[in-house]
Length: 476
Image 1 (cartoon, rainbow, N blue to C red):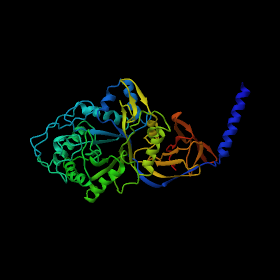
Image 2: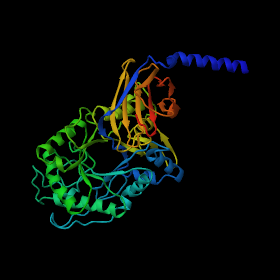
Image 3: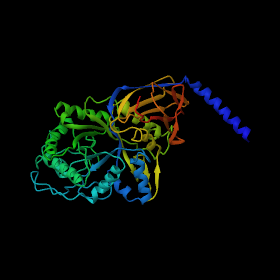
Image 4: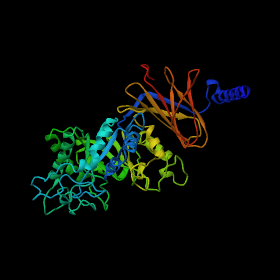
């Protein structure tokens, strides 16, 4: 038995030596240049709007902890750092609606709004915010899908309509822009009174669409009309919360709104540019100096737990790994958000599926996001230059330089062939950790091969592998 074991070990060693080329790899080479810096990394995130926070809250304690750790812990989960909350506009609070803090219309547009306390902890978004912050989330983004119905041209929070007072509207009830701004300020103040700072606030969601649920339409000029009221209202209230706009249903739909705001001369009043990925996928970067986030995107195919599927590829883990990577590398995003983190849904709108009060199922999409979360990429990092030479042209790479001196390099192998990838120009002391995700692995840790100054690792086909170099005082 001992002889057989020794023989096997020797054979494996010989095979490894042949594959690794004695320290000189002839496979693909990834070149990283930390002197060439690009955008700052703000993080990745999710939403639990439309009372999905309540769904998490109603889980039994072990399942609840599992969900929260999966989403927000940087040691047990994927380390998301952004939470997008829904700023309600509904007069009622049945499940799947978000109640307003000013549900009853005042006597007129110049009257004070009839504010009520945050309804049921804002559908447990307050509770979720506390839980997320305790696990490392540092950015709360509050976004409204619509103004209250009595402030709009169609007198309902649903079915589109426009905010009374913006260009092109003529409401008998008058101009409601200031009232809407006052409501947003009160919402932020309510959160701050509970110790939760809202860093960004949005007043639109998919304003290019007219939907059966909460929605409000707006072009760029109309968005600027409201920004010109909201911006000074926030300042007068002494709030540091910055304005985000406009959560267009797709990348190009939001580009149109941003262009309109720029033409109106109000871009300087924005703190953040936000877009979704539904109607058009992220593409060329926006022409703006503001930080840019993709704030909502998912798939509506039947539930897919797999890493790679030919038939249902739009919802598999590998596809979303590419979406996230390309968002940072091609569209120069500062942040990337999926739609729901965890939800009781029957399609791919979430990363985790909740079937009852105790059953939580994990998709491979979750682990795709983990490679770009705070386990490896810290808020404030810079994306840096990374390129690949060799291979079959199916490798995509990104690299981030953290402010603490650590580095993370993500390599996606979209091909079927296993590739031995070498990092070029790496200065390091000690081991270089590898992290592998594919159909058989969920963040499986390993150690890169280090021989004669070459750091290499095997990247199987249809896989995502990250190199992580810890801070050692020397950097790269």
